[in-house]
Image (cartoon, rainbow, N blue to C red; front, side, top):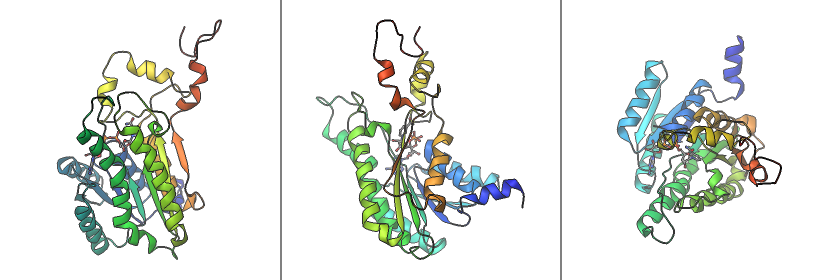
Length: 278
Ligand SMILES: NC(=O)c1ccc[n+]([C@@H]2O[C@H](COP(=O)([O-])OP(=O)(O)OC[C@H]3O[C@@H](n4cnc5c(N)ncnc54)[C@H](O)[C@@H]3O)[C@@H](O)[C@H]2O)c1
């Protein structure tokens, strides 16, 4: 066996049906790429049908078969239909990655209730709806190695950013939802874990990095000295989803290049400059 094949098999994800939401772009797409590298059978869910088709074409151009369902994760009816299609065409899903998310900036004293509810709906309620829709399939693997659910939350679950509307509240909810899934379905072989990314360059955040100086300033805020890439999250997601993380349950992994450890380093002290500031 070549080293490359041995590495690809290490996570024991070959032929497992892996459903990824928000898979047409950014972190979700990178997670799908990583799962494919490990031989998984991909099911891509996204509401952006055009981007989704482009993603499927990208995979098939490289000989990777990925099935796709254009679907709004806030619609329970669409999710139930998607889950039925997956069961019929691929068999029961063994991995679910909840990643579809949105940002709606807004000040607490002026944002609309519609914006608040939309963020909670996509970033929190839909994570529950997806877990519910695929729950029976995931639990059906209880005697065959179990199943893995990975929810993409955010460092914003712990540290609110002003004018970010309901984003932090939704992401904090995801952390608790994940732990609740773990304790309700753990006996049925389902593990549920969270990844909280820090600053990752994706189409969602691309506009921010087009401003002069932002990239460098943000890089200085991390211990690793750089802004993260979608692959930084994808590799952790594949591990958490895999049987190699078989006793990791109800956990959260913060993947932020050490940004959240830098708080005290940013406090001004006479005689000391915060790291990266001369
Ligand atoms: N980029 C970052 O810096 C960052 C940091 C922390 C957490 N996150 C989280 O990572 C996840 C992915 O973000 P990204 O940066 O890759 O964004 P992105 O915009 O590149 O990708 C998000 C995808 O989700 C899809 N989507 C949105 N709402 C949907 C819905 N209702 N139904 C189905 N699909 C839907 C979009 O069409 C898009 O393809 C989000 O949950 C986001 O909150 C991102």
